[in-house]
Length: 141
Image (cartoon, rainbow, N blue to C red):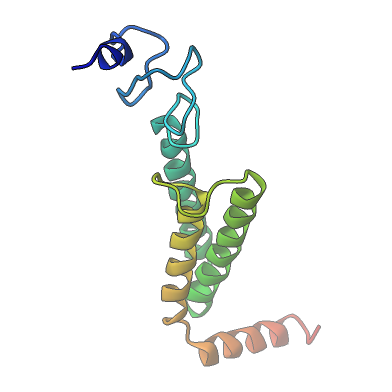
C-alpha cells in the first residue's frame, strides 16, 4: 500500500466514513456519489426502492377495489403517470441519466415497463362495455 492508501482508510467509527463502508479522502462531509445522503448512498437508494414499492402497493390496492374489467387499465394508467412523475423528479434534481447506482430514472423506466406489460392484459372491449353500462346506470350523464 502506498501512504496515500493508508491515509484514505478510515476507522469504522469515523463519522466521515461512507454509509456503505467506503471512506476515502473526500473531506469531512464525504462528497462524491456514495457520500451519506448523496445520490448513490444506500440511504438514498433505499428511499427510492421504498417509494417504488409504495407506488406499486398503492396502485394494486386501488385497482383491487375496482371491477375486474377495468383493473388492468387502471394499473396501466397509474403506473404510467407514476413513471412520468419520477422522470420529472429526476430531471428537476438533475440526476445523471445513466448513473452507476439505482436512481429515479431507473425507477421511472421500471414503472413504465411494468405499465406497458400490464397494458397487454387490458381487454378494451370489456372496459368499454363496463363504462357504457356504468353510464347508463347513472342515467346517461
